[in-house]
Length: 511
Image (cartoon, rainbow, N blue to C red):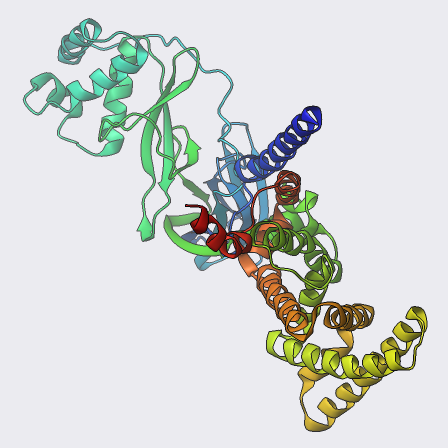
């Protein structure tokens, strides 16, 4: 016996581990939303390109666009133009779109739109290796002296490349340093700070790259934010030359790297780019379905959401049956309510899904009451069990048909669902109520019938509760957890709540 209990507990632990592990994998690795109403941010980045086309000249407009592996999931990328050819190429470090036309004139407007979401995104792809040595630039005169004066203290106060770059930026931002003022030459723009920092780090043989980013926040007009990055032999380090902060924030999207401008136009004048960022919300489930339709990796492709819609509705009903079964088990084993049949309340609750609860209870009561009267008369005729049950089943079908016709005549469409009641279950319920009535009397029969309806009502609310339906349908591992609880309850031999109330007088008498 001890061995059996140990095996039951071991099975419970295995089922719990498998179920919880499955849910954790879906939630943490596959990023499956835990709630059906959960939403994700969808960022829309719009770039409007404008220039004046020169007549009788070929036109090319080149603009950098983000790499595909940018740390976000791309939902859509659009290149909008009027009679312009579009070509996108990549050199590994950058992507560039080229709009081209043989001839055009006047004001030209081109548009680029990128839709991004952080959901299901992989970390941004970084260049595998970067340069770790740079030849020192040739500086002369006061500039060379100022560079030496700025770099020497940095060498003493830094331990590695990270602290060396941070200290260099800090020195250049020192307002009382004449050496820093000489390097900046009165220009405190981010681009000039980046130029000065890069020049000083070059003196120390540390190579740097310019990185232009966009901040993902609501803005009607945004300018690319300039960062510097360097490779320390193991990883890329990012620094803001203007604020001195280190580490690229999660809300920054790398747009392009290098010292070339964002937009270059040949055959046109007055080029300009206007960038705007808008935030929208999309249901995480809808977002996953959209990504799956586009061929992106998504949990949808390995879930019940992949099956046809009609099959999904059927699966949602089937998968909720164990929930109702567990509820009946808890009510019978822990509370002590007696019902007609072991899992009859679950089947009745499934019928309530179509008839709705109030109509279902009314129909169940009416059909059962009429069936009890008919069954009593059949018992008086001394019919055998099978014949008696067959006649009761036929009467149930007749009553269902008549109620359906009556509800149609009265305009109650809900009543048309009465045929969805399990006819055999109703017939068996009538038979069991009759037997209880004969053996234990009318009050017990009514009490058991009411307990059955109460249990069926609780099961009905459980199997139609949207958050629970979503959880079980999306995370099938929940069924393993339910099975573990059922195994655990299978060895419960303690008192039920109703038994505690029943034996209270006896216990108080002993005390």
